[in-house]
Length: 390
Ligand SMILES: *Cc1c(COP(=O)(O)O)cnc(C)c1O
Image (cartoon, rainbow, N blue to C red; front, side, top):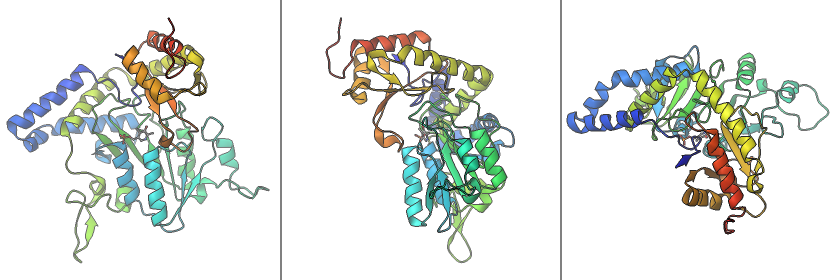
């Protein structure tokens, strides 16, 4: 199988699979809770590695595991006190599930969701943002960061091979006194996330970090947790106060989860060890070079067009289909006939999609020749259902 899909779920190493299997065996032999206790140091090392990757000022105790980036985001936004009339800055490229959480919360409070200005590629337009809030002839001027109560966005969206200027936004949010929640589900493990001063981060194991499914994480800077409510009330996050009503447990545990696949976290610990041992900068550099090669190889193949700039510093490539071609059908055909794994992204994934696209992504274990193989397969079958040319 030609695996061109780390943006959905990367191929884990043999050692990562072995670590999970060994943990499952220990659960059976010694009892699952004992096995978890014995894995304490490994789990701590995974949190330390994640904190390390996200940059200075974060430590293992600033981080809690979750089931996924989505559950981490939902818990965080549920716990975040947003008064009626608050304004939350978002992006059109926000991940579909997160957007639904935001919209449901916005309706409840109620608060406003305000789009930050973006350029035609979907990248935050810093010039427009910096002029925002100044007196303007336009009736609907964009809001300045200082007029917002919270800013939330994915550093790398799921459906576009772009990277947001998160360092610059983080700096501006700090100056304006606005907390920033940064979604690194699609960026941690493929690009440098250090030096972004976000208030909170959420991410997932199975994509660019090459860990197992069923693990995600949430990191909060400083004492932010103390100012939040409970995420999902449970014996792991809350207790009954003197008046009999639930109150949050101290610190980050108020946003934690109870039952989870500990084997997934043990696997993630192994994947992180491998990433840190192989020098992340070299890994990130290779991913960006591969994507540039991929865009050159794929643009125009079978009439598909690459949507992002050739040198965009993301490992994600998205392809717009030729007229009348269905990306879902082509993904299926590529898998069945050509043994090439890609993703088809439906319009529901994000507000900024005008139609479904085919997503191709490459990790360090990929090779430029695999893009040539995919280009040839796209050239063979121009339409979703046309017979292959010989
Ligand atoms: C995949 C993804 C998520 C959700 O991650 P899960 O682990 O599937 O919940 C969130 N944001 C972005 C940008 C993603 O690509």
